[in-house]
Length: 274
Image 1 (tube, rainbow, N blue to C red):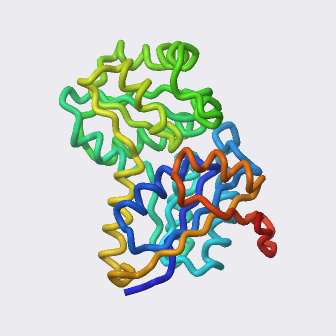
Image 2 (cartoon, rainbow, N blue to C red):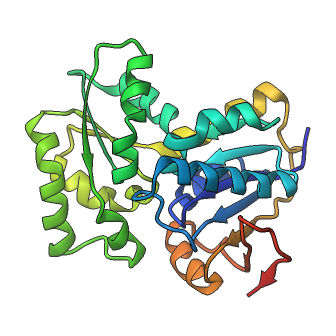
């Protein structure tokens, strides 16, 4: 048994959907969440730059003595997961492989769709993960760069987001995908719009819930679960404005987002509590 916290990080607040799934599945575990909101978004950045950011954040989480780290960011998973897993002496879980495994199991016609940021789609990491399953599955990928800005400001319904989503999803519907991976941690907040447009016969794969299952499996394998009945303590760190993180983050996680500490990943400083 191990009472140390689980570390979760993302380029912003989107990874709180993963934190929500982890907290729900593992209610006795403490979580430290880091949102790199000062350098958000990662999608348009180069893979080398995102890899450096991910390593800086991992150093911060290791200094906080986390027992397991979750890369709750598709762009960072695509750019740095293999390097992080090799470089750090603790279990590291990402969001891509769990979602791919679920999609491959769920698809009936072997046509799987993927929506994500430009960086995630450009990396080709999802396509590689599909190929690594050795299943006869076709992946149809579509970048949806403007989805994040709508989710960040809370605009998840209405004619504008419907029109935008209709355009993004048209190539996937034309390809007759029957399973759609939501390849960005912001996108679960758009499942209403996306599900409405693709229809009830298309499975939506939310990587957050499958990632949480991966966290459970890693803790079980390594015997790292917190003791039953432990009282969890969750902390939230942001490299940008703590007040903005708290306001937007509450839409993703809920009332658990309370005090937010301002922390730089590049050069760790004493926490400034807002």
